[in-house]
Image (cartoon, rainbow over all chains, first blue to last red; front, side):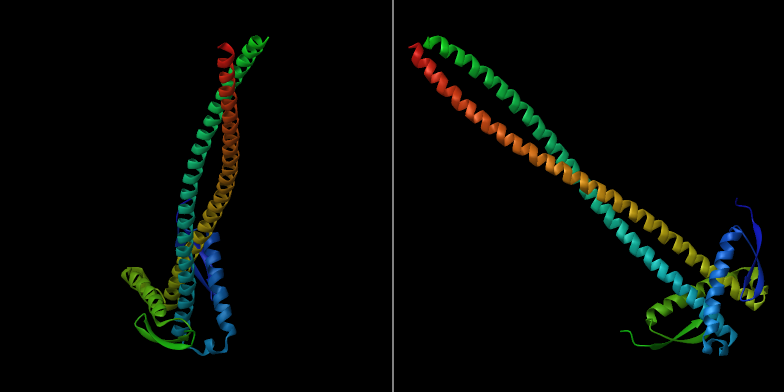
Length: 135
Length: 135
């Protein structure tokens, strides 16, 4: 997988042989991205009239601009992700606290139900006693 | 803020005047990023021996590689963010369900407590009655 390979790409109409560890598919994608930029620039009247080194620098600046925009998006997404993680942490704590409260309340219900059974028994017993006494 | 300005940057030792809406600070940052890449390449023996157009294409490929790596990171972070949002959505639902269950259980406690009060009243009444009858 990680063996060094030679890949031929065409950039700006010229063939370049790239040697490296990147896959041919990836290098062709990158070459195609650069070629699209060159094609866009060539549509502009002013571009072709610029000296070659200016053309190259404009292209480099344009690609670097894409990079810095993507980098800014990375930072923004990292911020959003960290916010979501904080929110998730807080809500997990709230859920656990609510679950514990529910558990205790359910225990309370059981105790109260047992008290009621006890009382009911007591009431029946007393009712019987009263009935006997009243006879 | 969005007025078109001219900014002079030095790239590869040459002065270029860039006309655009980007801030001078941003353009200098981008220029400095490109100059660092050029400096790194110039440290390599083989680079200077390449024809100028090859040097330019290598630089463009290198910047584009940074861009594609950042783009991949954007996609990865977007995936993570969407997972977190799903998790958050699920846990919010679980929290609401638990809160409703707790509310109902608390109502149940109140009803049971009222039943117990009623029973206690009944028991006291019957105890009094029994005491009177036993006299």
